[in-house]
Image (cartoon, rainbow over all chains, first blue to last red; front, side, top):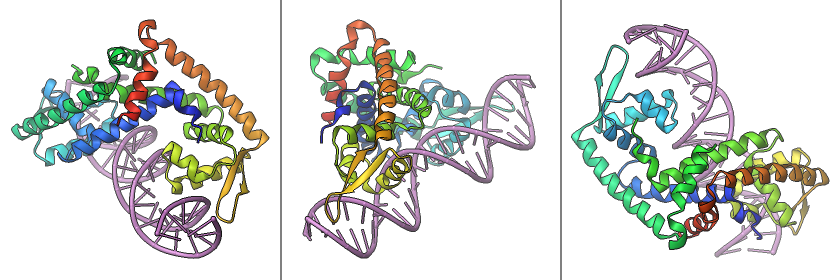
Length: 138
Length: 138
DNA sequence: TATTGTTATACTCTATAACTATA
DNA sequence: TATAGTTATAGAGTATAACAATA
């Protein structure tokens, strides 16, 4: 099959992202985490007391879809809420959440390192700047 | 919001792909096409008489999901089938399908060019080799 | 035995609309 | 007026299992 699409940057981008996504998802699955769960844990950890809405805005997740997501993290005992004012709730990691995040970070960092290792050295350092330009230049 | 994720290649890859995907989807929408429709038209064009199963394998689309997809393209008058043997059917573009593909290609190529143009010149030529290594090196 | 095309179905992810309460 | 949290729901997209017919 002649795959004419192989050299189209948009197609390649999608396929590479999809392959990487699937691979990482498989590794995080062993921890009982989806990628989005890990992303939320990371953001809460580096932004204690931020709200569900703010986390959602950063990750492009609708407010409404944050509800079941956070419920899952709360039910697992990884995240807790504390009232900020009458309408907002600040999110924080529990000790169990911090421990789970540490496990997740180990998986993620080894995965990211392995991603970069696959790229020939002469191209490697150009990937992040290029992706950054693509993401923001839209 | 401190976005710790900004410099993780896997995350950046996913966000860049998602942004590019959404942008191209918007442009193809004017033609009544989804991205996957365009991909299928492209592959049929460069591989006449290939089967639905073969197209699906190349694009990582399940056989079962090719059925409604091809039905849509057939109903639009862009694709036709001709029996290869008792169990396989070869796919081809109709003249209307070729015309639609030409429109789609114009959109896609201008989009791809604009994607590359966003990348600073010193990084630009490294993107495709890097993505290729990521996609295949999994 | 393996493959093609197909049907039916379930599951995940995401989007939208509406509502309450508070800032 | 705008925002936070929530509920309910709809729509894509994708995955799985099963089947008949053919290679």
